[in-house]
Image (cartoon, rainbow, N blue to C red; front, side, top):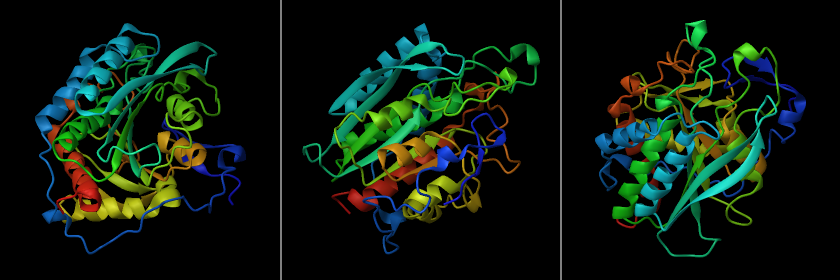
Length: 344
């Protein structure tokens, strides 16, 4: 086991994390990880239609709620919206409320949004797949080119809302064509409120507070899932996803499967085979604390950044591309129905 690893942090700076962050057993095998089959012709798998315009609208609806920051009116409005919409397609949809502290000591109320489609109507031990994204927007535009904006909140259209929009449209599609597996959707809150650059300090575990809470307090006792997929920043106009190290470590088979599906659908130029450095994101805690093998499908630009408008006031609807949302949604649908579709 390595004692120290350089992580590409959500703050965008590679720093040396304390060895306690990796006291997880780097060679631990995830439980229930499915084998990767190569015999499926994913391009021929029958799936419901993924509507890119609907996914885009779900992103826009979140942004229209206002800044989705802890304790804000925008947080309340968007939480109500997400529960209401997911409840239209899912068997259950509810808020997991929690209390947490930000890096500066402020106590805030978080709201994880959890919805489930259990197409087999089984009990808690039903075979499950976990799909996740974060839905909060950042309090501080600390990477904005104008320093006067560094303490202003951002829309978070791509960084947060895009992944949620894809999963909302996925839930709508799955509701029209049942799967032979339960699907849990979790929209994590208080993911993007880690230490800002201008604070000139470091605090361990200041990011991903919603996933840390859920991983320690899952909505189903003794929760387990076959695998999980986390989406983050998936609406950029030039999407590129690489094989990030934590995902490879915990769930390499799932990552390889998803990349195989993408290639079969003609998206091999977007799902890049490059193996890249670890990123501290919600999947880290889901893997480490909840024991669910989860991959992170996250924008990773060739210049080493996430995307041009990351943590700036420019992260708005102008820079979200419906075609990018569609490519992600189609890959996920083909993968899910290739494995669990009753018609295939």
